[in-house]
Length: 132
Image (tube, rainbow, N blue to C red):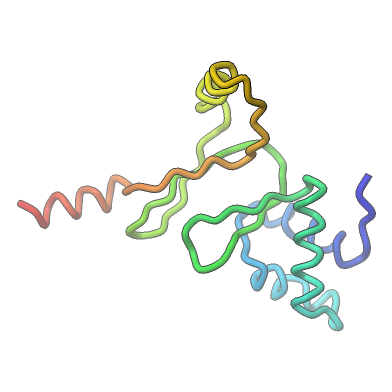
């Protein structure tokens, strides 16, 4: 069982309550009023600890810094390379793919975030309109 200090507990609570992706700086901004002596290095250490213990997940969605979120239900992301919109894909929609890869390569997958980059419908349409 993970040992949750006050800072770790409040950070986890904040990520669970927000139900969205947050950068380390956004986490810091969201909790600093509750922990006035908090500094960024403590936030980074807490995020690393919580990630290591499987309580939160970290992902690189092509932004300037990683994003964190509480682990509630396994899901994946589609990231538009143009507008940076993130769509959530339920794990059930890709479970068959994961199972197939696991079976074919005799490999146990631990990934809790599959991130696919591409163009959303709106940006793809805008590109198509420009090329006409």
